[in-house]
Each structure stands twice: as structure tokens, then as C-alpha cells.
Length: 600
Image 1 (cartoon, rainbow, N blue to C red):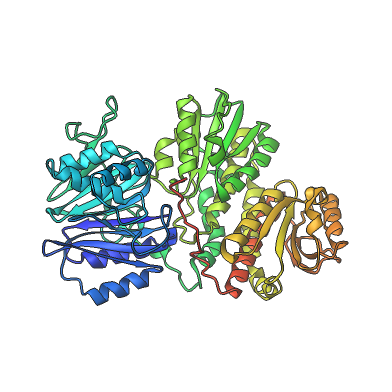
Image 2: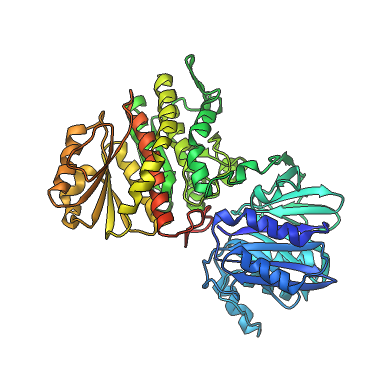
């Protein structure tokens, strides 16, 4: 969600800000804005809706040459998506962009109003700039910013600029990602992820929690005092640790596909192969990331959200079946508040595409405080979760720009299957390779799915049903359809139909049935027949054709159920996409959703 860009010392700052915001569109947003220092004066331009609205306003405003500015894409948390609530937020002479949540903003707002300082927006962010200007009247800019950081509570990434210091950008990071890239003498760029910096910088410092400072002609970074818990200029300066940025943006382009989501679905066989490189072969399963780390583990707790949670459920079936280790899978937003019993010999495994999922990150911190070994499956190196976990298995799926995850989910599940082999000291490498090949072959069904999709647009809802590993796949299939088509869909264990849901069955209820030849075939077939008897419309995906089905999508037989799983996964993704396209929806940026959920 919400994206941040900023820069100092470059002549094309407006071009960089707009280009950077364009690279952050995939995260989801409902408004956007930029703020620049133009001839010593602050100029802020904001717009609701898509980025082209902001670009049009910038053209009309005819922004003059500026070398310092900040920008933001907002996804509404406090206050509706209006221009007044869009970032940057302004005071009398300063403006700020912010990702995250200021938890005590209501308290600060009351204090400001008691001082006759009236806030204009409904957001939590505006208190930052108002406090900064209040404290600026009492001392220097850096002291004022320091006081702001000691007053606000919550998670945030902040960039702030001011007319009174037109060559300076203040920054701070706590619980929300922020990166700074030096690109030349007196030239610095900021962003909340790598993407906007590619092509501009070659290296970047990934700010850690508690790091803050400012740039003018040089970069000044300080760290929040560990003993005092205070943000202070008197803290020891932080050494700059530069890490290389990706060298090109080719993976972030559509390359002829209609949508990034479509491109990413087609990339799955390749990125799955890349995940396996150096990890799975005839000689065995090798995971150097966890070598000598998992000894003594007697159970596993998996914490994740959304699609990653569904991958975790698949992992439970695989790990328990292959490695005989008990696995508990938890929704992170519930786990963090329910005072869970976490056993000392349990591995705490978190799964996240972005590595910035706030709920998952907080459960990771909780587990570390309890002394558990922690492992992350993540797609983004240098992300908050990667830096926090003891060990990480990187997913190698590449940039995923479609908000609805596809290839990251594929590699999450693949990683869990490989981990199950590693823990169980078995080597199913031939079946793993075969399953990846089956994924590629499933793409040949795209034209059939496109033609079929027109029949599934106007019912009153969908059931997705499956058993065993195909139950979490049913959950994921329902989620994909909900995310991008806005049609109601639910995933169920097929055996649960008779325990209530079947009451909804009628011809306008579409049921997508995942029928494995290898796991509980007869029982799942019986569940399908129960729905057929109630006149539900049935689409079956299986290696075996069921005559009673209204529609049938065939998959190839496989020597392992996961070969069936990955074929069905591709079909469900394509079906959701084609239904959404027929309904005229923006597949890559569905309404109300964000790619990286960095707040609760």
C-alpha cells in the first residue's frame, strides 16, 4: 500500500517523482501527490484517482525547475480518498509524506487544537507536519524533527521538506520500509521500495527501524537510542551500508501481455525453476539457508495473511505428511493478539510476498521475544521481515506488480514442498520437476478458459471446493476471483457442503470443483454429485471427466498430487483473470486493495 518517493539535487525532480510513483502503482492507491521547493517556495499538487490525474494537474500547473521534492501514492486508512486527505500534507511552510499509522494522532490533534492550530484533513499524517512547525518555532529544524519523532507513536516511514530549509529532506523509518540512494555529490533519492530507484541509482542504504536523519549536501543518519528509547541527534551516527540495486526494469514491464497479472501467471514455470536452482537435484535437497538451524525442532507454527496464509495451509499438509512434524497455521492478525502458547522447540515460520506485511511482521517480533527460532519465506530481499527473521529462504519470484498474487504464491507453495522434503530427509526431486513442467503445460488451456469464462459472470456467487491440499487451493481460487472480479466467492472443504453451505445450491450458484485422481477421488466426486442433485452449475477441473458436470477443464495425470495442484492453480488464476476482464475491471489494480499491507 501507500508509496513514497523523494529526491534532492537532481534537475528533473518532478520527472523522477512521477516516474517513481508510476513504479509504485502496483501497490494499490486511491490518490497521489507531489511537493517541491520551487524558487524557495513550497508547491504541492494532489489529485484523487489514478496517477494520470496528477500528471495532468502537474502539466497545467507548469511547475518550474526544482531540484528537491517528495511524492506519495495513498491508500485511505484515516479519512476518505479526497484531495484534502491526499499526501503531501501541508502546514504553513512545510509538507510531509507518510506511510503507516500514527496511533496517538487523536490525542495530538486535541493538543494542537487547544493551541488554536486547526487541522484541515481527516488523516493521522497531518499531525506530523503541524507538530514539526510548532516545534520549529522553538529551535532548529533537526531539533523540531527529533521532538516530533519522540511524540508520535505507531509505524511509519516519513519524508518532510520545508521552505525554511529548502535544501534539506528529513526522513525517519519505524516499521515501514524506506530506502535512500546516494547518486552523486549532494544528490540523494528516496523510495519505499527498490522499483522507483532502478535506472537512477546503483546502490542504496536500506534504513533499519529507528534510523532517521536528513540530507542536505551530505547524508546524516542517526539511530534511536536502544537504552533510552529516544530519537536523538546525540545518538551515535549510523554508518552508511550500501547494497546494490537491481540493474534494470525489464521484469517490471508487460512485455506484450494485457496485464501484469497475465504476464506473471505465464512466468510461473520459469520462476519455479529458478527457485529450484541449486536447491533440488538427484543428489538431494539442499537448503544452505537453514543448514544446522532446524535441529531439535519438534513442531512448526506458520504465521501469514491472505494468499500467504493459504500457502501455509498447503505447507501443513505437505510437512505433516512428508516430515511427520506437527504444524499449526495461524492468521497473523489473530495470532498477535490472542496470547498464543508457543512452545520453545517450535520453529516459527512466517510467509510474506512483500516482506512488509505488518501483522505478519509483528508476530515474527513476538516469536523472537519468546526465544523461538524464526524462518521467513519471502520474495523481497532486504525487506523488514527478511531483516528481522533469523533465517530466510528467498522465493526468487521477481517483481510481482499485479496486486493479486500469482507467481509468489506458486513459489511459496513450492518452497514449502521443498522444505517438507528437507525436514523429512526425502528427495522427491523427479516429482517436483514434473509438477513444475505440468504448470507450464496448463497454460495451453488458456484459450479454452477464456471462452468458458463468459458463462460465469452473472450468478449469485461461487463455491470453490476441494479436499486435502486442494482445500486451501479452493480458498485461494475463491480469493483470486473476489479480488479482481468483485464477485462473491467462498472456498470450502468439499466434505463440508452437506453441513450447511449446500442450502445455497441452485442453478445460479456456480461451483468450481477441484477433483484429484490421487486424493479422495470417490469422496470428492460424491460431494460434486450432491451439488448436481440440487441443480448447482458445476465446473470440474480434473484429470477425469465427470459427465454430470456442466463444464469440464481437463488436466494431465501426474505421479504426485502436487502435479495436479499446480495445474489447477494456473487454471484458477486464468479463470479469475478472464472473468474480471469480461466484467471490465482493472485486473492489476483492483479496487480497495493494496499490494503490501503495512498497517493493520
